[in-house]
Length: 179
Picture 1 (tube, rainbow, N blue to C red):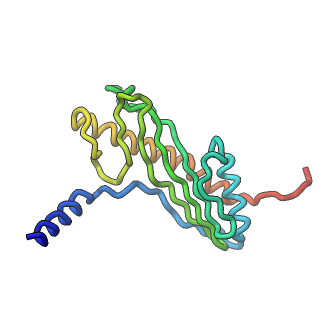
Picture 2 (tube, one colour):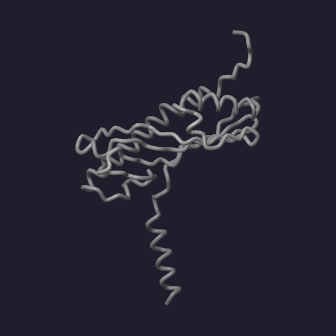
Picture 3 (spheres, rainbow, N blue to C red):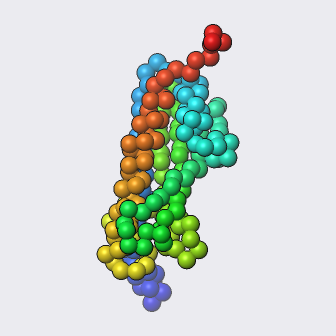
């Protein structure tokens, strides 16, 4: 009997978790002829330029192993008119970059929505699912806000931070004192 209950529980958990993978933007990019140290310096410059306070957001800074991990946050202002004040806030995320000779890999991940209001609607972790796991208000409104959150993330990452990072990773860090 215990085995049957365990099996049913595992199937139920597996069913619930389908489509609940965290949203991740990742890519491996080749930069031929560029050392790990140079890529690390470029990545550090990107972090300093893009994050408001690089020292506050830096979670891991390991030059030897070529790893930088930062916690960031982006403003979220809902474009859904109905109850937008209840969802306005920010989306926290993690930025990771791994550096090796001639290439690097980045991840933008762990997106989590938090409202500014104590009585607002937090949507929590943003996943690949088409619908949110929260049960606030009506289904139609929840789905609109969910899609708006994902659209905001997509725009700010794909058409903002990712492009800025790729540009920064192409430009050599000038160590010259000729200025």
